[in-house]
Length: 55
Length: 174
Image (cartoon, rainbow over all chains, first blue to last red):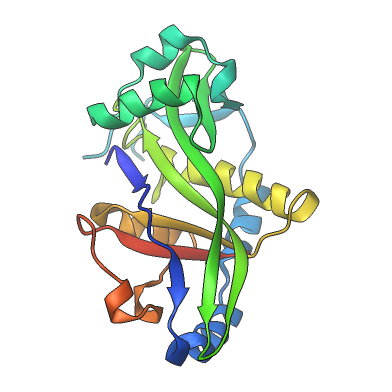
């Protein structure tokens, strides 16, 4: 996969009947925690990679 | 136990403006329009573009462009816009695709980790925002899901949600 995100000029609008559901679900997310763990684990700027490509 | 060849990659996360144009022109992610877009953004950025730069091999590993955005909560008689950053582009060179750091973690995951770290730093120390938004290409849904993003289309009104080449809106809460 070469390109993972693309620009699309479409706004992110939560529908009126879905705002409560959106806010409730968002409270339970752990997005940031996932990365806090990774930040601790990975050394920035100097990493050994497996040179073998997975297909 | 299987021994795998290891390669040291020493990289930096740098603004596109600091990269020599000849190195930008050498970048190829396999999609010409996105390679050309990077050359164009070296001259005139469409947001804030950073590259992941391999210092040992002097090559661009990948790039990302982000910009300010908003997530709108539409009530019956009101609209509240919550501040956000939107990842407009995220692409990786064909040379570095599928290289894995460890099981289930490719270089693209590591790039995303650096980008999220950078955006969290901006949100915590410079300009606050609540979400990171993006449109994922269809094949990258799993990549974003394992990186803390959630699909957004179930919260949109049907008439406002249109597939554009199958791309999927996704969000990450800070």
